[in-house]
Length: 339
Image (cartoon, rainbow, N blue to C red; front, side, top):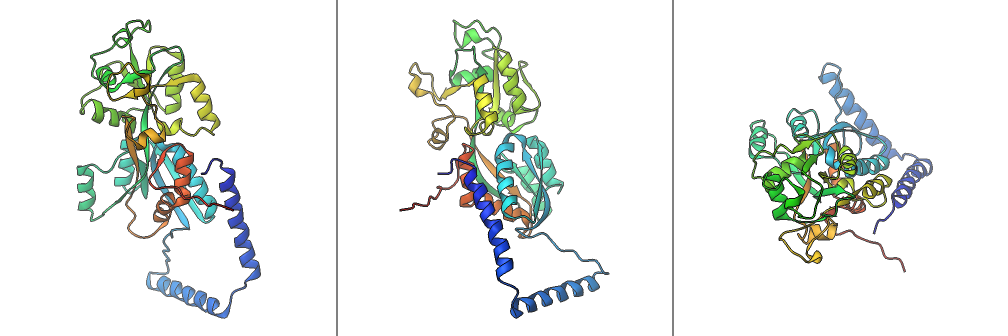
């Protein structure tokens, strides 16, 4: 189990030390020198055949590219990038954090090599790439959840999915309709961003694509949602689990002191044991009702840096980071047992 980042940092330092040792202790043999001579000759011939210009593509462990990511998945994306680029010093991956729809636009316009998003390509998006004769990879890398948060003074922290649907459909707009003892007044619902993955998920899952009622609005980030809810007793905040799931992160600890996380149930119940918070175990068992998958969608047509990053994220080391972030990995995490 990976519980601290120190282990990964030590691993990176060991890799760097090994690189230096190999370079010092093992000079190039004649066979290796010959391979390098052949390589540079090939580059020279290619340059002559292309008007003197040499175009060398990035590789799976070197080069420079840009990627896009839904801002809801910024914490896991930054964690993966930090370790990947620490392991492979010749890589430079520039992340663009934006809304979900903007991330897909960047991918379609070939402005980024790949994106991290909470959904796969829609049929019309798949058709677009087919017309370009591009077959993007769509790889699940983790499972996440939509989290509802309320003010610390709000006692209503157990909600059924039917109650949530009633709020988003405009049927229940007062806290008294949820709890007749409540004095919180009118309900307001705040999202992280307009056209975010969170709002898209709720619209598809609970509204069947309909418009949100007037008391639902958006701010500019998950952090702003936490700040707003902490100051307004009548508000329900909608954020991504990824922003509050890493129990070792000081920002997460600060967030969880200022707001309450709502436990949800598929059906109305008077038994608190029937309500579940968005922990990885309850996501895996489908007991928490608002779950979704996280994907990397790549349009890369060769084995370049995008493929290298994707391979790392789905590897044991990459999935350990998913686990550390409090999300559900796609694979069982391997452990080394020492006797």
